[in-house]
Length: 430
Image 1 (spheres, rainbow, N blue to C red):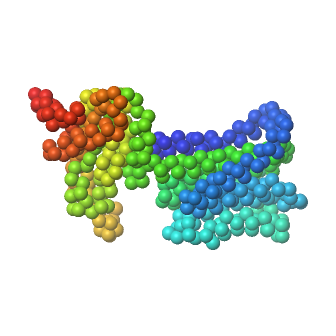
Image 2 (image 1 turned 90 degrees about the vertical axis):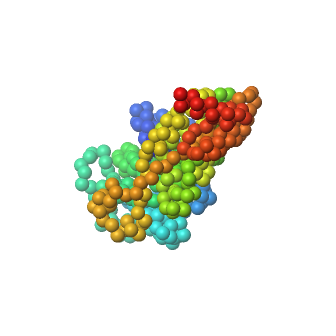
Image 3 (image 1 turned 30 degrees about the vertical axis):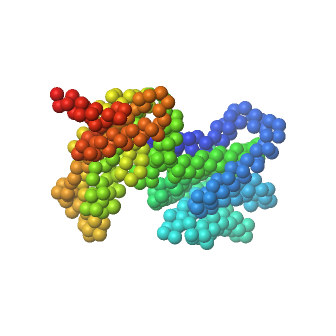
């Protein structure tokens, strides 16, 4: 898990868990949450947040996100709607059982090959679990209510059925079925959001737990809406600013970063040597693996953020450092990459006929190649030199590296690139 993913998980958890803190504070200071007409004015906030999240999911063609958000919206409506008789209390127990199972089914259906096109299955996943439970409570009576009261645990403060905990565990396991990393992150945020929902429902079915009822419901579902909306923002950010293949920031992110550079900075342009020949020899699938291989190396060893510029080109930005300070860093990265071995994988149809044990024996004798890079380094050499001009200068230095035989680093110094590199070579050899 990347550092940004961990940070995103913590922020999502904090947003979703915010109502819990409010409830605890309300318990410590009775009546605090009921000040003025706050509870009435906040009841509309969950509608706004959840509808915005559903709209963004629809615009990004992620129907599973639309339907999961629609379920939370339906759960909010059912939670706050007055109901007579036993159905009034047991609808909260029904939501606790239906929530994790419904959300699990929605994301599992969305992960099928038909994916977002399978609207009937998504609609059924969203509506049926909670709808059937409510109908059974109303018309079948005692048997269903006994099921919703079923518990193995003996925790005195836990008053919901243990079926909700089992469903939550199954939902957590199902997250790993998601192949789309961005949807998986949203699915994880949805799973986290079930926790404050269960906390609220457990509070509502407890004796004396319905104080400040509307405010408690509004805060809980607002926290869920904020967590889901933040996850949608993260998904949008990843799709716009991250390269899908290498998971490095893309050219759009690079252009944004270059706007905020200081007066002293260095741009490094990097190109994988003989990449086209490698693609022609081993296929584009292995070419993609090489791009990931180099991207991972640059992200780990350059000491700064690496960007995928396009094709087999990458870019590094060193804010606050001049070219002569950056040169030994890039040279060290180039040397360490050249020493690493890249293992050529067997074609997929061959691997499918090979056991894991045989693959382990063959890995040591698999064909290996050395992947090398060429780099060009440039810093602004005059006041007012635009960042795009510096990037172009780094490109010229990169071209010089390729002209001189590849697998080397060149610096740009004004227009005398070739002369400076000859001087650099003489200094290095001495």
